[in-house]
Length: 145
Length: 332
Image 1 (cartoon, rainbow over the protein chains, first blue to last red):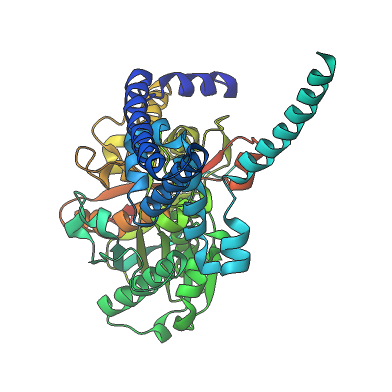
Image 2: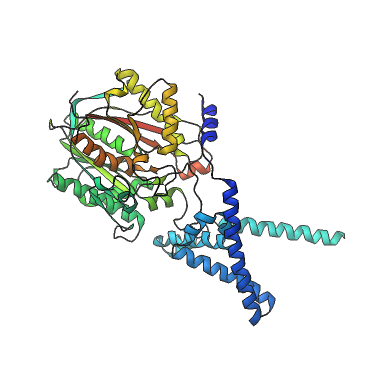
């Protein structure tokens, strides 16, 4: 068996997690997070205008994800619900908080500050870059119509 | 090419010691380890320092069991998985013995025992300690993601053992002995997935075993246990299939430390255990116990995946190496 054949053989025999099960669990987990978000939004809407309520909802979910990461619950939940916990804003918060906790011992400058965005950094870089591209494209689109 | 290195004089394992973490202690071999620690930090404030503390405790346990002091050691051979091997060098700072730091990924323990046995057997030194360690948290941090990061693992991934094992070697004439070894070749299996290291290491294991059995003329029946270091269930099954294709039947003799360490049903470890500490802690506890209670010959094949986080990101294949040591109760 040469290298290519072996690689194919090893890839074919390695078990994968069931996509159906993953999808269902992610749907349930993500759904629960969205329900919590909606409940928070409705509560905030009683006291403030819609725009502020939206921001407060996002901020609350980020806070909860950070808190759950800190007390060690988030990774347990993420193990079960997978993409359901990672795709909403909570996943982003976890990626930053987890990296910050991990690198605390190397100090606030070279550790927390520098390594905090080790996972989430590319999301920010490409998120901002594509927003700029989209903005430019949208400007010309408005000029054309 | 010379495949088997036979030591001029068999080297005695005069003492062994092992220290593990909580999860390993709760596994099926829990009772065999000398010491365990519930605190993942080992009383320190970082995981790297925890691993160093574990190394320190292992060496002091080893010497206490042998009724010796640091001054009695002519050489300490130690290695771990961290960058620049800091767990070993910082952990053994106090021992003040001549020190060689090693890196052979998870084959480090076998590597250390081979070098130490050679030096003892030729009487260049009288006595040496060989140890290897790994820590789940420090390895996760080094090779994968932050500990609290919420990710899912694939079924082929393995759980790094928090553990350290050590042998004290000297030519005293008393069993068990290290009689011979095979130094492994670097084998490129073509696997790039760092969550499937069993598959990456299986071809190197087979290469080393074939070199040993073809040259020695022995068969699996001449041994009580033939064990690889940390292939896990996935790598073990692949190795079995490859050995079968090479007409080497090891049925009933072959096992893997990565499969012995944890309870697959109760502990969530996917394909099994991995890490330098896996084969080291099991060899220094369970296998030594087996040799005292009836087993005569054991082959231990330390398996190492020679990847780094950089090589993985640069999409390079994962090369592997496997070193074999023959531990026997008889001198030949």
